[in-house]
Image 1 (cartoon, rainbow, N blue to C red):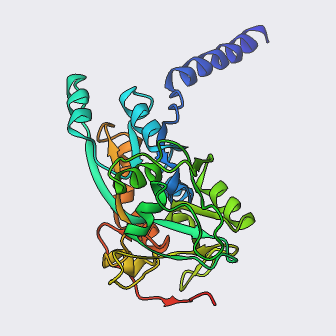
Image 2 (cartoon, rainbow, N blue to C red; image 1 turned 180 degrees about the vertical axis):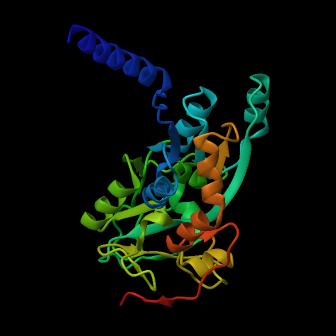
Length: 301
């Protein structure tokens, strides 16, 4: 009996040894930290879960920051992929080349800046020259009430801020301009105050509960903008952005330095591919590889 017992114990030990030799350690899940201009948070809150559902493993962690913070994170190697509204400047490209950093830049879509006011505010149509006067402080009062125009944008060093700064050709900004912490905070501030002119990304203004009916969010009025006093006024609807009749449009990009097989590059290929472009399209932005769709426009009364 002792020999039989010893025989079974020996088999058990031998089995455990072979089992241990044949086992494969579980691969560590790849994580991609991507820094995204906060203007595009609604878009990526949809696209990232969709992408993750298409891959076998891996996780994308979004960091919603200002455009400048995204660029600095890229330069400091905190991330390999960023989403911003411009390409790198020659100076930035030279700096990265000095660090032997190779990167790709993909135009993935076009959006716009939107100006919003409270529904109680009757002043909601502006030409670009009128806006320049407001943003530089040359015109600081609402025409209808004579009260001070309080201008609010999402955060310092954001793409929205730089768009306005470049629009006024880097002149001094109005003392009536202030920043909060997000596009969402701008919307809430406008909902509560009739003297606020809010500056946000167009990705934030749409009520997308019904993708066949384009309707803006409740509690805000989206302003009509014209190139000049002789031009027609338009709101940032997709077709008007696509046809460039809405004056305040901009492209947005994914800049990537991840290896071709990395999760970062997989995500970029997803966003530039059919599925990602369709998500941009359904977010009422303009995909880089598709045309704008025809939809019913509901004008607020």
